[in-house]
Image 1 (cartoon, helix red, strand yellow):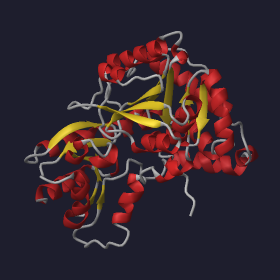
Image 2: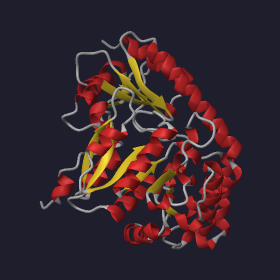
Image 3: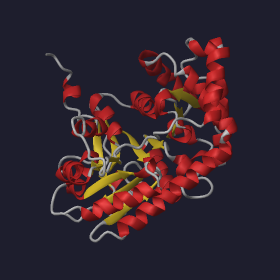
Length: 389
């Protein structure tokens, strides 16, 4: 069988691989599976949003045919208006493209920047789909270790720049480590990218669950921000629209015209019903989303308190949907995560799935995606971790 060498060299999706660990297993009624492996809402959108989607499906014929490649104009306008207000900068509808989820936004951004043999710097632990797409595209992911505080440094990034570097990628709040990158750090990375003549891709999939009041950074206040900055966003987490695949890419109009070629080739247009749902959510669910944020922050606190109380366990980072924890065992997280399924019926992802093979930090950590379990579930998780030996 002929297989694209770049595809063959790409790791399997960690989420897909972990699901195979439990595919043929049955769990005792008194020890049901606790799945903290994937960061995706499991509940459907709130009822008013589902009703609005049903009304759109029934009454708007345009929602069932091809739409503009770069997305619904009204949604692009809403994103531009709300983000301009939130960040205190100037974002126009011409700076906004709607995509089939945030992963596609990343793929489109990279497609405009890099080709085979080029390099993109990814802080590690990295978001695995970013690393996967770069490898699939023949682009080299250059690992930038984040260190003990899970924050990369500009100096270490600058040391990794070559004449093949095309972009630096930041994810904040971070996946998998949860940490919220300080505004001055993000600003410093933008300055580095500007000096180097490369792009700074800022993935803010989890921006709605940032614990800080106000804008998380000031990048959009610079009049020439679009020369350097590409922002990515997901409606999936905010409005529970994971199955409808709606994301956004904010960049210069010129870059979006280049991205349009990619987007037209792979999807033609974003999901129409999903776009109308995202627009309705932005216009009507502000208070509801604030309540969702409060609940996620409460779960974050419960996880932090719970892990701290476990002998030998440490919190490396926590925020948004994730806790990145250091385990106390003389064992790689790769085998520990598999053993946790059998011993305590917990499915979590090992840190080795978020790092290069030669990075020992991955073996010491686990990612816990806590957004899908309530505070009672978090208490149960801590009880089971305490039994692990």
